Length: 398
Image 1 (cartoon, rainbow, N blue to C red):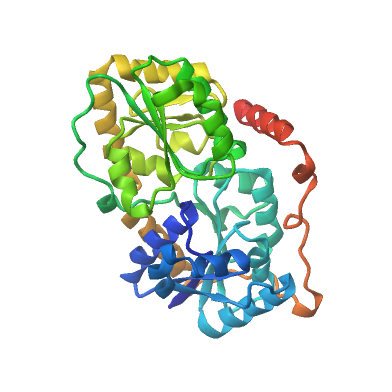
Image 2: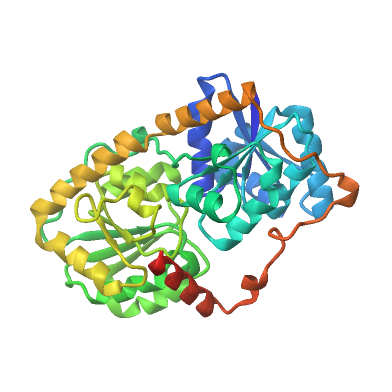
């Protein structure tokens, strides 16, 4: 069986899921290949960093193709070469929409990676054209069923898994002088809350240091806001996947002040490495992995003082830090390994192969259009500050 995975090589969570899922499904005789289209996919294919990944997938069409031509190229390639597809909702609007035009014999599994209203609206737009939907956290599954009309029996939770072999099993000796914090991920404030990092650091002892590893649109502004902290904050830039395990093992605490997530791979990778998480409380997301006060700490979104208090406790109580580190590693390795994720996907695929539910008939390409939910909505035009405030309020009420 050959399945396409909508996406292309990049440093990020959805491509990490592809790599892990590909390896996990191979043993069941399922070949998974990435399939991309559009300018970004073609740019990734030409990037020397991803040369080795080109053997694992392909691009279709041309970089300059219109949305209609991209859809046509996707549909043609899928129907000619694949038995089914994994659709990563909203990773690419054109790819997401392409499933509405596929032959009904093509198996379609939608994967929802985030808890934002925009992601949910996009998922609803193709809901009736997929055979099953996977939410990467319990929160996503509950939201889709309770608020967006998804069928309970066709909507499941499968958390993102990690390859524990890629995470360092042994940690270097812990520093006796100061706690080593790490922020790892896209340097962007709207989702990741990175502008809260310097505020948290200012409430910490001077012996506590922070490493910011990653790149993104808000990197320059974050560096400017951290200027007064001197050597307490160090910027590492983007980190290749092969180096992530070592980086995590070199730090004591993962700091994750996100406003929203789906189920962050970085979080469970850090826990597996014994890096104690201090993260925003996202109901049904971060609390799936973090037991507050046991294997890490949760703080209300934007509560920088609450985050700082948790870090100070870890800095002052080294016995608790060591115990929390061990508990975090054990939970991540036992409950979020890639083998368990792959097993759950294999069970889902097997069930669909032998009992495939009816989906909406395919639409004609001649009438191609982006439906509501895949077109920019009113939220797109709101000021970022207002969107951030609304997201924070929404999560605190949840």
